[in-house]
Length: 390
Image (cartoon, rainbow, N blue to C red):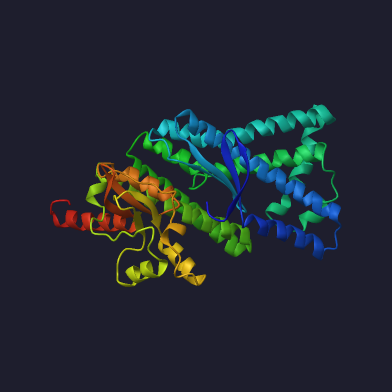
């Protein structure tokens, strides 16, 4: 994911932190500064934040390890201010497998919650667990209300019963939130998996997305009339997640059984590694494609040069820079007989959104998301007319 920094590796999976995460740290520091709190108070806030997002990493790791069981690798896990994202190469095609992958994340939180209860019981005695949980719940009210809770939270010790009580509440909140039957939460994927056992995958996704959008409207109304901006943010998050998932699945299944050669562009402009960025800019202005394959004299693909890289180089006042110095050498490619559905999946996760189509070591076409979208639109229009498909 762009604008992310790698902070470590867990179970062979890279753990990244997004740059926007720094905004959250800055917000915590600002709250403590405005209240005149000392550095120890700020440390308490950071420990709580690390606990929350450490728990999120373990939650996402549960999804990743469950997917690995079915031969699906995980690209990375990225921490965002709103939580975490485990980028799987793909979701399982079998609804039962998708259900297992979706359940694995909340299952990790349940296990951590049980461990917290055990820790509290060992420290304070199991008869005192209920009172500690009640205190922990009160201490976590700032998640749903306001930064006022940070003032009381900063007076608590960093370790001990209060820590495990707060950690337990964090896990309970994550389980409840993720079990909501709405994309992109795990509950939405569970609902889709259950429905897909009884109907086709696209219809199951549309029904699950509809449930999610209804919940988004409910959250939005509660947030609007209740004056709670967090609920409004959740409503927007859920609505966009439901809409995006429905569109993604519909497009993916619309491409099933179609080879890449049907949608690839066969009339394209290629550039040489010795060409300058100024020359490529002229190609863009002349109306050629936005991204360009870079070929050697034998026609082998050496890299891809994107429009974004061209504009960045021009903005740095380096128009005479060679293409070889700017092109991307990490790119995906496909064969013309590869299914368009697989090409779409790989393009969707690639850093470069254009893909060369190669046959017998020579490029025969180029494809990008715009080509695929246009292909679907034309195919749909022809189907409505009753014309043969392209």
